[in-house]
Length: 296
Picture 1: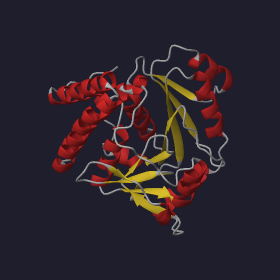
Picture 2: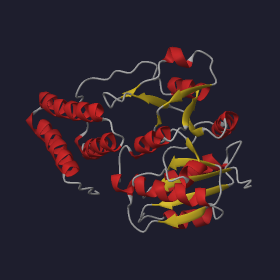
Picture 3: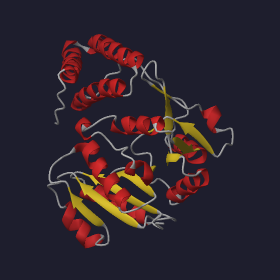
């Protein structure tokens, strides 16, 4: 029986300085990973050079091109699972553990629950299978002093730690999604296979306090910076794919209707802005329908 308890991988792309800080925080954990793997999505900066200088013990794997989070995550999960690691930290270069004992608390929770635990993390949500929307865990529920809360999905950047055995059973990210909701697709697949997804109540509450997120204002069709509108293309396209893949027809229809509704409401911010949002929505629906999975 393998005694490889805990490993980690981090996806990076042209953020060498940020990556070095994240690596330092991961290796400084009270329970550091036995192995840390960096998956480089085709960086053109000094990522490899800095890694060799500062952290030669960290394993480096270059994708050779930008495979997006979905492609890089798939490689990282499969590499460490095949090496026999029981628990695998799934990380981004700009999302280190916020406290020195984050990994220890999460691994302790995972091991206390048993083999049926698919993954643990700091922050999660419930998924409404009829609307396709994520539902926020209330602060009142977090304050009930339960050690953990079962959720349907744990977002990227929330210190996801995954059961390696689930990877060996074929539950991996969809590489073609490239960017956006690849973690939701993965989480729904784990749920369908009978795994439980757990968030640590104490860490969750700490995050909400640290980021002052006890109350969240969610205006309809809020105006975003035009420089990030491209993200909506992937969100809409990938969400429609995921709802169909997981046989959620009501969620598929709901998500499509919400996306179209947001496009119409976006015109309140001006003709140019509304046109940009509408163009993104139309391209996303078209490419989903034609099974085109373009990468930026």
